[in-house]
Amino acid sequence: MEFEFYHYAAFIMAGLCAGFVDSIAGGGGIISMPVLLAMGVPPHLALGTNKLQASFGSFTAAVNYSRKGLVSVSGIWKPVLFTAIGAAIGTVSIQMLSADFLSKIIPFLLAAIFAYTLLTPQLGQEDRKARMGKHMFYVSAGLTLGFYDGFFGPGTGSFWTIGLVLLLGLDLKKATALTKVVNFTSNIVALTAFILGGNVLFTIGLLMGGGQMAGAFLGSRMVIVRSVGFVRNVFLAVVGVTLAKLIWDTTCG
Image (spheres, one colour):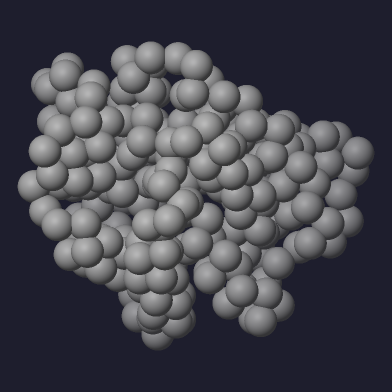
């Protein structure tokens, strides 16, 4: 495919903005995917290229959070392993099954998350007692949300974050940090499948990836230095926009 100079500039800016938003509350694909499609990239190539550029952002944010002590490296193998397994199954399944059912039920789940977070101001302000054992949570959430991210995707970060807050008792900062680690895992697994299928534009993906890294670094720094309230507000905004987009796609698409 051939692009003009302004296309490349738009790709880089889209990556930067998506990386910034995604590192704080997930949902960066709301920015990057429409830009790829608007520039004439076919849907299958847009999905693969989006996974490539998103991997740069999630990796940068995960490393930054780990360096600041928001992620326990020693216990990270369980969610990573089971997320990888779930994502692999989901990525294979999407090639054989329809995502129509998920596209209809996910808006309702996101609406519940949005309403609960909005009506619970103290949610995620500090660590609380876990309601589920870590092993059980990592196995069930890793397989389920890894599968979902490989199969469909929108809202995955939101589901991880709210699950870590409600079921493992993490505050929003720690939940956001761990979410980036598992997001990177499912991104890499899905990206591998897209590469094997020849559905990645590497030049565009790498350019956007550079923007993603810059945006993810800035966004993760904001989470580290700002209050939990800042993370909560961005989380609500991203969940709200994701919800609105899915409803629009379902009713008007």
